[in-house]
Amino acid sequence: MIELDPVDRITADAIGDPGERTFYVQARKDDQLVTILVEKQQVQLLAASIVEILSRVGKETGEGPAEEAMGLEEPILPEWRAGRLAIGYQEERDLVLLELEELVPGEDEEDVTEEGEEALGPSIALGPAVVFTPESEIEEPEVGDEDDNEPMEEGPSSEDESAPEGARIRLWATREQMLSLARHGAAVCAQGRPRCRLCGNPIDPEGHVCPALNGHGSSSP
Image (tube, rainbow, N blue to C red):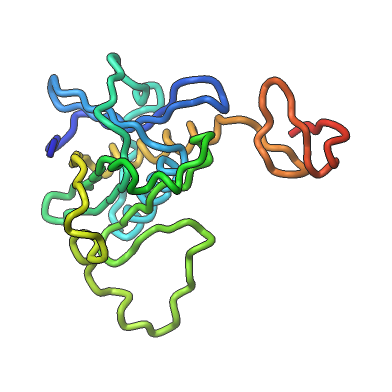
């Protein structure tokens, strides 16, 4: 396991043309630079999760690093592709922990589509007792549910103990650093292909045949 405690900088960014972008989470401490491949939706969920956990902390958080300081550093040599991501906050140190776990071949591949950017990927665990899942799987909690505040068990209990374990990276960062990551990551995800105003599908640079028009024409965003 690699641990950067704490990081000097941390960011999430993408490289490539819209529709063909590759997304990364990258962090550095001193001379150690760590880069991890991630999916677009993982960056989106991570950005939302950071905002959620900072709102729980209840402390005023500064702006953090400026936008122009959030680009990727060279060389961009990813260690591996991330499977599960988890984020939490340690009050004693006033630091946010982001843990990334390697995607083990065959483990979550069924959730990944060909285009990559639309892949659901795995969930992101947020602090104690909260797990982010795809929207279609979210169930509204019942009022008065006494289990809402129970601590989350370490590691999924339903996994086969004989299953191969992936590598892990733990990144400790300030609230300001993580807020900048969330802000920049959300902006990067929003820079993708424009969406068709009729069907909602992404529009490629070479054109778009809209199913809402039964294939008889193209549509603009």
